[in-house]
Image (tube, rainbow, N blue to C red; front, side, top):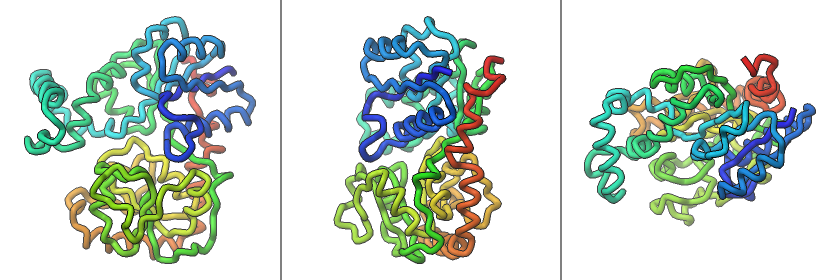
Length: 352
C-alpha cells in the first residue's frame, strides 16, 4: 500500500534532537516499510509545496500528523485521508464541557485570550491549560465536524470519547504511541541506582521547575521555562535521540507531572528501557494503572512536593524490583514492532 505520512513541516524528520511527533512519524515510516508498504514522508511547511509533494507520492492513504493541515484546500482531491491530533490538552475538553458547550462563555473567553497579553490572563484566574484549550477550540471543532471522507486516528479511547461527546458522528480509530524497542537499550541493573528522571522540553506545562528540589530527580531537555537554570546540579543538558535511547536505562523511574498529555511518547520509551512511571492524572493514557511500577499523583497533591518525593522514592524501589517485568510490559504493549501491526489504514476493514 502507498501511504503518505504528513508532518508539521516545522523541524526535520527525523528530528536532530527533540521532536516527539517527528520521531514518531519517522519510526512509523521505518516499520511500515519493513512490513512491505511503500511510504513517503511529506514535511513541508508551505501549502503549495505540501500539495505538490503529496500529489507526487500518488497516495492510496494520506495520514496527517498536524492539526492545522485540516485547512488545506486540496483535501477534497483525495480519498482515505486520516488525521491524528497531538494537541496535549484534547482530553481536558471533557473537564470543561460547561464552558465549551456554552457559546456565549466560549466567545467571551476567545476575545479575552485574543486581545489581552499572556502575562495578564493568569491574573484573571485563567490557567495555562484553559488558555490553551480556548485558543485551540476552533481547530478542535473543525475535527469534530470533518466530513466522513476524513477519518480520525485517536491516540487513546479517552480522546475518541471527547470528540464524540462534542458531536463527532463517524467512526474513530485508536492507535497509541509506541517506540523503537530495537533501538532502546535495556540494562537489567541501572548504573544510576535509586534515581529518577524527567525528560522533555522544560516548560510550565510539565512542571519541572516545581520538582527541581527533589534530590533523586534528574532533568534532561531544552529549557523553555526561564525559572529553570542550566546551572541546576542535576540538569544533564539536551540529549540527542541516540543518547536518550542509550542512557535512559541508567535510571529507575520516569517522572512526568504534566498538566496535559494526549499520549506521551516518553512513557513508552521509558517502559521499554525498564523504568517505572510516576505520572500526573493527565499523563496516564493507555496504561494499566494496576501495575506496581506505575504511580499516579492525584491532582489534589500536585503541589505537595513532600508527598510527590515519597511517591517517587516508592516507585524507584518497586521499579528496581520489577525491572524485567517493566521491560516485558513495554514490549507487549508499546513496542513499535507490535503496535504497527494494528495501524488502522493497513487493517482489512479500514474502508468500512
